[in-house]
Image (cartoon, rainbow, N blue to C red; front, side, top):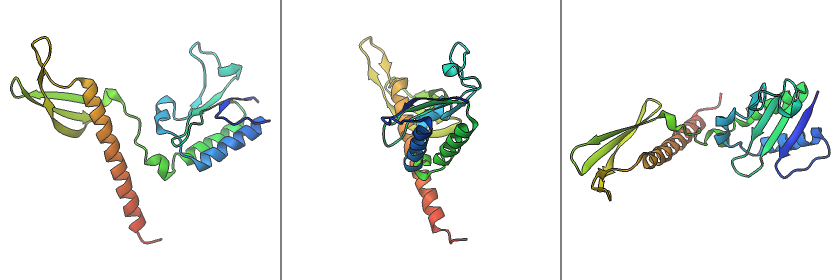
Length: 188
């Protein structure tokens, strides 16, 4: 069985076991950054490189990769040691249930945003934003004359930023409401 610690933040450990213990301590104390959900949810089974080779030459490898929300501590560990894999998977799963992890907005996927432009006249318009089938809002668009004699509203980049902002705000508000409601429940 092989475990290779390619990165563990700024920590330097004498042994692989000490490196894993240090990472598990970080996982107990700090929330992971949800942006890394886009890259395999922190755990990649059957970890191979782009050429289809096992990462670092470790057959049947599992790769652990991520960073933390409240501090920079990149970790990259490749292992086929069942004990190490089990410990790291359990610590990551527990971290992903922490309130300070769940309060972070999930990663934004630009492919899920639909931008529907509605022009009422040459200089008036609105934009309806829908994300993953759910209406976000309909916004007034600022229509301006560009340098080529065309009237144009805001570009897609602008509306993606608006969608990200509003989705993040709504997620945090909904999470906070759910936490307040659960705290108000009588103990069982």
